[in-house]
Every structure is written in structure tokens, then in C-alpha cells.
Length: 155
Length: 204
Length: 213
Image (cartoon, chains in turn cyan, red, purple):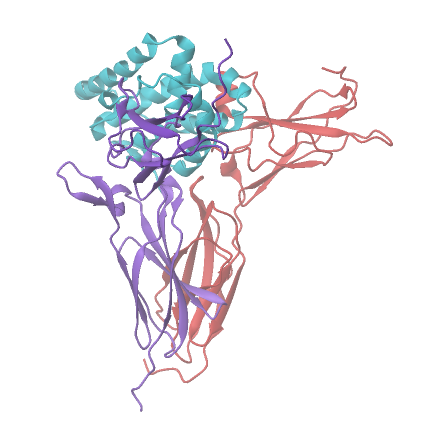
């Protein structure tokens, strides 16, 4: 079967099409709430040209932020927009991925993990510059950008 | 919420076969009345990050039946908590929660049903249609000493499909098993089925 | 001040995309004036400016080809249309956020079916898209979708099928009966993006076997 290969971190048991279909079920509703079209949180500087070695650190940071901050605080909206099922599918599959990511903590990997951290901080800083609710809506609506990037590590 | 005078449903359990998951429970008996049941679920995320959150099942909120197909609700390979309650008019029972969380990787995978036929020299197989989550590994061989086993991946099931062009007079055997990508597991192989082809068998 | 209702001027502003040919289309209600003129702008999501699309300013038709302007696969886009009717009433409507990778539909493949005596060969031709790589090289669908594969079916007297499939472009069904008609269907699959093209169909007849005549 297919699996994610984020550098040394291997993640099986995820059917990427299921995640896409969950996102597509809610895409128009969610993205229609975001009318700030001149700000993109997951910009090219965050996700482009990420080395394999960096990818495990970056996906770990991003998913952790999405689970701890974005999903957690977007729930009322998910109920309001009646997208709780898609919300749950994505959240629980992200939990599976997170549980299988073991980014190496060895010293020699520090420069690489530091690179990944800088990328993540770019994203987080952009997030914090926006109004809280606006940022949550925008980040939740940008999950297709995240899934598109993840797809490049799906083999 | 209505006052909880109605007894809660008992004997809650999940039967899961070939990735079809059914929650069942015992009836709440109220003579000459129709009792409704509601099913809710929460995945690992909900129980970890927002444990007060439960999601109504797609098909059974409410239902008068004593079972609920929760297949469409279980959309990740994580433990799911499930609960059921009864409702009669304004009366509502307490929730009954499944004792152990259910994970779809515990589903029972049984070998696929298959029909092996021939059309002239063509060996044809039709596999049971089990839905988009299933791939089929079909092994087939010519029944003779030292025969080499060939394997084909077939997807989806439900369509009669040519497997091999056979040699006259030979006997060919076929067996199949399923693979479910979402849980990374195979079923056992089915019983082998063999067919013999008319005509003189060619010298080896 | 009650804003004037101009919803009749503009409806269904959206992208229609197939094989990465991205066309912006819109409509208006039947009761709107045929002399209404439309102007199109587009923008990259995350950037500030709206850019006017040359060739789609003050037009009366209801479509505009934005393929070149929306050709970067890592970007997402918006487009918007402004309609002005002869009475000076105007309305502007924007599309949903558009990603050609997600939205494009795959057209049926282009295939040559070659019948022989006991086999049928099928050659799938490469499908070029308007997308260009950094070096200007025109990309095919296979270049863009790493898990793209072809699924070939040969229908045998309506009772069963022969299947072939894979990433290669040449396939051959063997062991067929001479002088017999078969229906072949060829579909493009891109599993990760849940994309499936409509089938290309060819009806072919194997050649008569003249070896003993």
C-alpha cells in the first residue's frame, strides 16, 4: 500500500484520498469565511524546497500546531457550519500521523531541525499577526495547501 | 434534557467484518410504545483534546432499530468511543458507552467470495465487490509438478475478469485474498478453485 | 440608502478546468441586458494586487481564458468579474479559491487501437498540458501527477473483461479469437487526487487468420 515517507519518518495506514475527500466536503464553506485574499499563511517560504531530512521536523511542528491550536479552537465553527464529520476525519487522521512521527533528537540533526523550526516560525508569526478568529479560519482553510505539500511525500 | 427515567440500552457491542462496522444493543422495553435510539461517537482526537464533544452518527440519530451501521463514522484508524441512549417522547435515558473503544484495525477480514469460470481457453474470475477500500491479490497456477504461482492485483471486485489464457488439456487453480490499505492488513486466502480446459494437453 | 439589487447582472462566476486549461465562466439572468459588458481581474492568493486580464476588458461574452495567468501549480488564485449594464448598474462577483491541481478534470486519453490476428495493441499518446517547467519544457499529465496510471479494459462478448494497467503507454491483449469484434475502454486514474477521466473507447475487430487458407 501507499505510505508517507517524511525523510526517515515513515507513516503507514493513511489513505490520502480519504483526507482530501473530507476537506473537499467542507472546502467552499470554510474558505468562503476567509475574505482576506492578500494573506497566505502557508507561504512558499514555509513549504517550498524542504529537504527530506527537514520534512519530518516540519510536518511534526505543523500537525502539532494544527491539532493543539487550530482544530481545538475551530470546533464551534465546525458545529455551526455542520462540518463536524470532515473535521473529525481530518483531526483523527492527523493524530495517527503524529503518533507515528519520531523526529530524531540527535545533536548532529540540530542544523536541520533548526531550519525546519525557522520555517514553522514563519508560519506561526504570520498566524499571530492576524486577528485570532481570522487566523483560525484562514489556517483551517489552508489545509489543502498542507495536504498538497504532504502529497509529495506520499509514495 | 428530559428527565432520565427511561433505562439506558444495555449489551452494547460492535461487530466488524470486512470493514463494515455495526453497533448493536439490547432493546429498552416499553409496552405499546416506540422507543428511539441515538448513537454518538468520538475519535481519539475528540477524547484527547475535547472530551466533552460527541458527534451524532451519520445514520442513526435517531433510529428505532437495535443496530447502527457506523462504517461511515469511523474514518480513521484510531480508537473510537461510542455511546447509545433511548428516547421516548420527552423521556431520555442516560447514555450507555461501549466498554472498550473500537478501532477499525480490529475488523475481521474474511477471504473474498469468488467465481472461477472459463470461456474457451480464457480463465475468468469474478470477485465479491467489497467496496473501494479493498484490493484483491489473486494467485493462480497450472496444476502440475513444480508449477509457478502467478499473482495479479485486482481492483475493484464485482466484474468478471480474464486472468490467463490457458493451455489445452491443462488444469488451472485460483485462490484470492483481500488487502485493506487503511489498516494495512490481509485476509486469509480463499479455498483454491480449479478448472480444466478441453483438448489434448500439449507436450511439455 | 438601500443598495440596488444587481444580482441579475452576474451569476455563477467560477473556473472550469480540464487538463489544466483554466477558463473563467459566468452567467447572468435571462432578463439582464445583452449589451452588458464584463471586465475580468485575477489575483494570486496571498498577494495584494488584482490584475486586469488583457483581452477580457469590457467584453460581452461570458468566458475568459485564464490558463496562462493561473499556471503555477503551487499557487492558488481568485478571479472576479465586474458587469456594467447600459443603465450604468454594476455588480462584481469573485470566484472561490481556485487550485488547478485540485479542480482540473482529466479528459479522456488519446489512444491508437491496432488490431492483429490474435491480439490488440493499444498505444496511449502523451497528453501535453499548458503548464511549463522552469526550463520552458511543456509538461505532460504524467509529469505532473506522480501516481497517474492507465487502466485498459477489453470487453469480451459482454460477459467478462480483460484488464491491463500501469504507467507505461503501450499495452497488448493477447490470446484473442481471430476475426472477432471487441470493445476497448481506456481510463486515466490519478488515485491520490481521486481523479478519473471519462473513458476513451475503441471498437476493433481482430484480423482473420489466413495461415491455413
